[in-house]
Length: 295
Image (tube, rainbow, N blue to C red; front, top):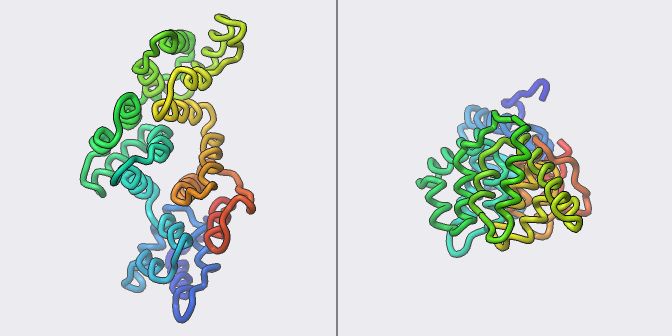
């Protein structure tokens, strides 16, 4: 933002937390209107000015869901994602939706940074965690998505008809999951969007009843369980990234607060539009979420 002054913001936050009671409105006004990199500078300025950790001060003054969203905002984005991946694979059971949303929608540089932060914070390579907590084709899909080796430079759309035919063949009798995995994890997003368009043409040509049938339709009929959800997430996010995350956001509003916080905090500066006031929770938690998206 213009005329950003981290020291002044730090001073205003200290004032908002000083004395009896907390000025939540001021905290919202400051933090929701600064991008993540500026919030990190405010945190550094606070420690420099007052010799205290801003995050610890906020934690001591806030509570409930409002505290959770504020603390999430104060983490660098990649650290927040790494922590949510760790939580999704910790203990009994695995939160597959979180793994899919985070791992199947990142570009190479984001994945490489995420792997580095995850291992530094949690003492274990991300791939090892995935392999120990998931299994089968779903595990192999996630591992492929975390290599950070997608051929992002190859936008030769002349390859699209051939790749679409390979996907069509792989989805016939005796589904070849590995071929779906290979194509969807390796080729660039512009090329894959062209592949998806060519796939519809093949289905329309092969059968009148299949006219306009999309790759997602084929995945729904040929796959099931976690691998189906993972493949659909990959295709959906490639076709229309904002629409994919809008659906994730809508689903998260059904009481999934961790996902709701993660989505809004990490996507507000990228591709989320506006959220309806009657779709969100109440109180300062609601005010902060709306301020983040509007900001």
